[in-house]
Figure 1 (spheres, one colour):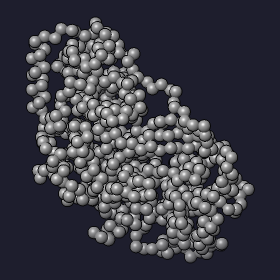
Figure 2 (cartoon, one colour; figure 1 turned 45 degrees about the horizontal axis):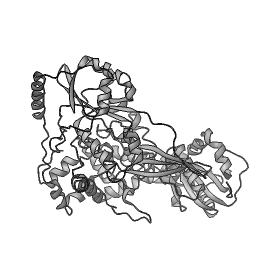
Figure 3 (tube, chains in turn red, orange; figure 1 turned 45 degrees about the vertical axis):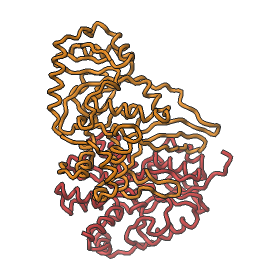
Length: 259
Length: 341
């Protein structure tokens, strides 16, 4: 290719690094990946990382300290596009789980006591877009390698990737699975963004919502349907908040407030 | 059309004999339902299966396929030849849907991707007995004299084998020793008795008479908003529908940027982006608008464009929707009838 290679950085904040691992584990794509761009920073994969200007930054993990918040703002300052990758970056993940009225301070003390932190000022875990503008969301827990490389390739071409704007149900039906919701199970398929290929329902396991909500998730209809199937409010809330942090609980709380 | 007979015990031998006509696809058990699958062990075919989860359409335009590959020099069509296929076990409703699909893909514009697969496909229909979701009598699609190469009517210990095309005739000529050319008056009587028994077995009574007029007068019905509140926009109704052909075209470039492929994927009018155009404007932003589109298209607009409704009464949507929005509940609602969901 005659064009100059784009500069790309990959960063990880609070999370399991699972999304970067998915990339590293894609051996058949690694050579073209490193060949097609100047990978300026990818600390999970290489040591000579720098803080130069970027065309594209992929950010994994949620923000759980003031220092991380400053760091992600600095990345935003020097990149043209910022893509949040994985559930934690997109929606806060499990560590941003909404756990009722007690509040973050109390929960934090219960786990860490009153000790102090060196070089770190903990704050309640939040998704990336609470702190910086995010250009594109690549959800998943962990992300899907195919979706990542598709997204990466399109950004290198200055072309916005087209991601599904429909729920897991569609992918599940394409695979001709039995509908778990119709069988009376607590499945979040209708609310959850497609992209995983309906992995769990294809193994007869209900959808936990780990891709986060699709844009138009009809949370009210799903809530009513689950109530009709005799699930308690507690059971529904537990499932909603499990994987998507703020992703599904915020709209559910809004809905419950309105009930 | 010509009729011969084949004994039930000869069916598997017959299927074996027509192997040169392509891979055999038939209904097999999967979980609580049936799916169309490639069959090598004929005893896996479920002869009593009424509806596969996804109809035959997946074999004529798969949920996702590559149209062509491209690089910086241009496009390259695939030189891989598609396999020939024989679809076994389509009931009259699906055969009517197949005719609708054929029409749709060739009447105004011939779709080369559909034609490529269709020309390599032979169809063997199979008679059926309705269950409580079948309403093909209401859509007048419970019999068919066309749309198949061969059709089997189950009359106990033998089938009447209807030959509907020269391709079907070729198939029978592969194994003349397996069929009985002589159809007797006794067989006619058995056939008439079977028809009567089948006719009396339709439990779901729907009436689609004058439905285009009802749809025309229903544009402002509050029903659409009510359904829009409930709809999960999951697309299940369109995925299982044998007359839903909509697709999207998406390019996938490889990492280097120099190569890639153009793919076609099933789309659904229930999806938000379906009616979105360049610049971000969405003609059907609300779910209620999309539902109205789907049902008026099936029961009214299609009649105007192609002379018949695009519902064949297969009953798939009745079992598929988690919130009971289907052609039955919509039609009953609009006509002010008692709605059974």
